[in-house]
Length: 294
Image (cartoon, rainbow, N blue to C red):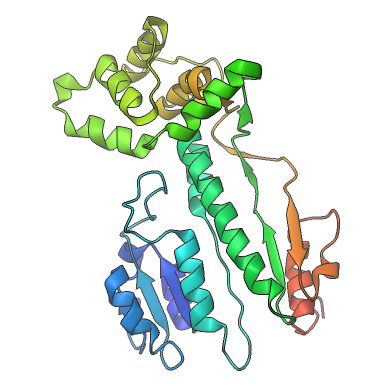
């Protein structure tokens, strides 16, 4: 439904994953240009002023940064592409950029993937701040829609330094671990095999108690007293808190206050504290649109 709405409502440019939702039926009656690979995207963008352009670069979500091929575009690359395509629009532009990987990796209690997604988001924000700094007509708002899973550092001192080093050197996500485990014959999908994949992905060598916890989780037994941590990925995340120094309280969205920052004309409309839906009013006022309450 959202895919159809994006086409029907005349979005000028959309780039990311979700190709399976943008069927031929979704584009029925549209003159949109559709690129289904990075190589196809540049030619399509040449016509972005004349035709809506959709860059559908993955069937579902884009791969996590930690798993991505070095040649594949990241969030910063896509943001740069969008700025280049839209910055000269005579009537200005409104650009929404989201890193869904932050949310998904937190749900999975995957500290290594989450850390890389946060770094990528930071690098993208650095690009956007540089863009805004060179203009006097662009408002930038950076925030999130909610907190998720309450990740926090679980080690301090020398142990914390060692855990942070292991976190930084991790090379694969839980998605990769799951996919590799799924490639094994059913009889080979043991706790020991899973522990070996975790070691390959994160450099964490699990002890006997930790492997035993994986075995119980694989058998479908409840390992954690809190039901919000009863999935296999949450058990893996809890175990890896001993090695990577990041622990999660659960796997659901959380009610923590979230940060927001703004710069550029209209930044003063963003209050120091408030409901996140207040940002809608701030943006419409900055754009000079009618008061949504009228």
